[in-house]
Image (cartoon, rainbow, N blue to C red; front, top):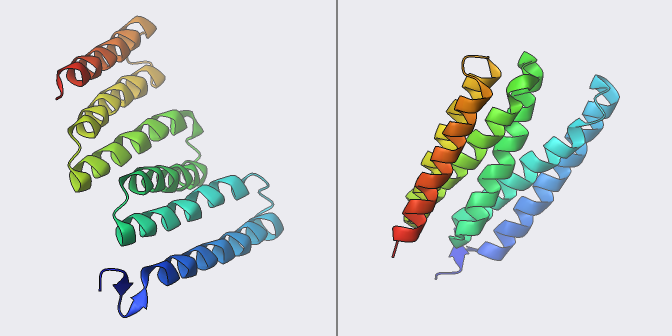
Length: 162
């Protein structure tokens, strides 16, 4: 029985996941409006819960695109609340790059895609350069050198993959 998990169809599990994530989104969005008076949390709550749903879908059906996009959306939402809690929004762009890097790494690990691994490494090194630039440890020219080096390494690896 390939299409069942615990004797229940996988599509039924997926529908249940979608309904639960929509309900959680509505509840937490309402709470953020009413109690916290935060009117922009709804988007990041949407990213968080849709990311959870897509991760569940990738686990059930082994879709690499759902894995990548789910982890990406989940981390974008999670890092926004992390930056909001610690009031470090100047580093949010670094967290976005780390989200892309981590999503690429997890996708390469579970689905054996070597290009995703090199994309993850490239994005990770660019995020290191960006954080060093944000804290004024390196100049703009060194940051651009980090960026160009990361893109060149990724391009070189892309052209040599079979």
